[in-house]
Length: 190
Image (tube, one colour):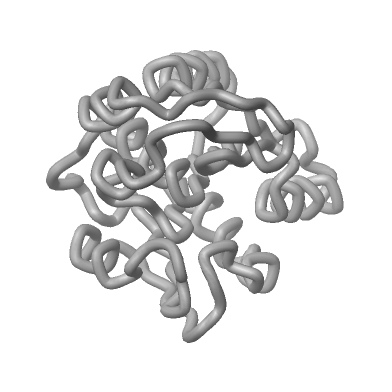
């Protein structure tokens, strides 16, 4: 089972989620994909994700694929449940990076409005994994042209992980679909 974890102000309708879902559907494995819509509150989002992992683990192995803030969540869950995780332009310290965005927010896909508060940042800090263990369980995919996050920060945090560094591109990782085979190969080795 691949559980895709979307990023900040995103949803299961994101480009990367749809690309992964379509690839699995084309391979006749539609039932091996899950992408829950996450609440804006980190504590609630982790609760939803933990429930999804527990439910999926009963029948099959689980591999996480997290993008941006979803990569941050994936690291936490990978450590807690000893899972493999693909991290796509992951946030490393979102409790710092999102501070500049405190205030009114709107989900880019659903239009849902909410207030990003210091409580959100506290909940994110509580999920921090200062030093990931067993780097072989991680596949880090970053783009050097990421305009939101400095890819070098992620490279430093996951030094022994399998790594793909794509020159240029952007935070949305426009070339993600071109690398789905490597994601599925990594997941298959779980």
